Figure 1 (spheres, rainbow, N blue to C red):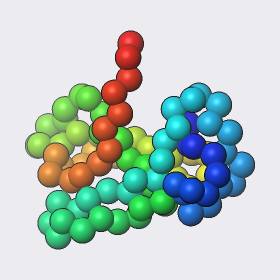
Figure 2 (figure 1 turned 180 degrees about the horizontal axis):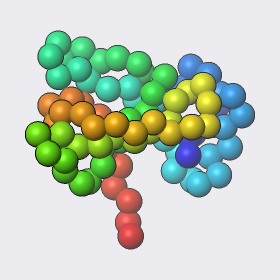
Figure 3 (figure 1 turned 30 degrees about the vertical axis):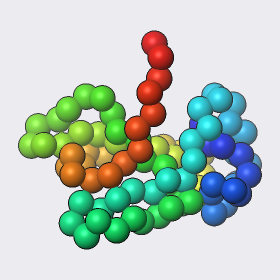
Length: 86
């Protein structure tokens, strides 16, 4: 899922990008301060399904491993968007 190498990631513990998705460590934009955080460390992508209370899920890989994080967050946060054709 992650692009290989360290151009877009702080660490590359054996990424293979076997899915061809080529996620890059874009971090996120904080909804309160407007600052960007975790560039080259996390890659968060919005889920298309809205949740209650003005939130939606995001999903994405960490730079330091092969696992995916998922969590609900307010719409005001700035996460990446990736369009995937069905």
